[in-house]
Image (cartoon, rainbow, N blue to C red):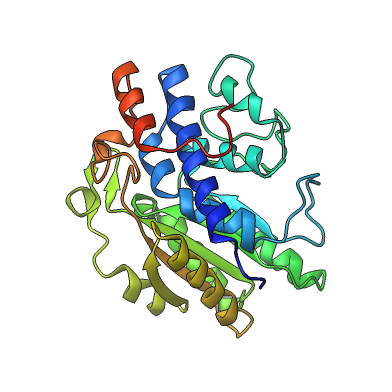
Length: 282
């Protein structure tokens, strides 16, 4: 892996966070909290780690593939895809509006470049990623499959069926990540339905597990580097990405209340004052 341009990546993170709050504010709908918390993950993935082509073909032959399971954090993905050249950045202004390709949860019938599955119905993304991983192996392709899930999503039974399937079939070309911010729409995860020792659970299901800070670009880049070094050795790999919901906007940080609430005009001003415009707003 080449050396990352940390200055440029940090500029991207700041700009994408601006995009997120502006998109959600404009339509007064959406999920800013998890999007802000996962921004550094998306920047590291799309601008340094992932072997991908913005010209986009649905079959993804010869590319690494990414699947977003917790599709409600679509604002960060849409902004990342636009900033990576998949479609014009100006299209971000249509987020969640009628007839927009940028629906609240990613969908495929609008044919938005970069999106291979409809997501947001929680618990399904890992299963789809494993199908893609198995196809890559059958086709003799060396590429990796990446998937992001939420921690509240771990309360879905299908996740654990998929976890067993991956280990049983030695799908060691999968690098899964859980956004481990401890919050879900109804409150703290530990109060809604505790996950207990999540690391131990995934290890017991046959995965190699590592934890790292998801709100520090250097740590995220190092975590991806380690994950890639652990792949190809007979076991699937899981990252526990320790993030803070709403990261980058002080009044949103750490609270489940910003899981799915849009900022008002004054709150938008406060957010933008904390997020530097580095690459130009759409």
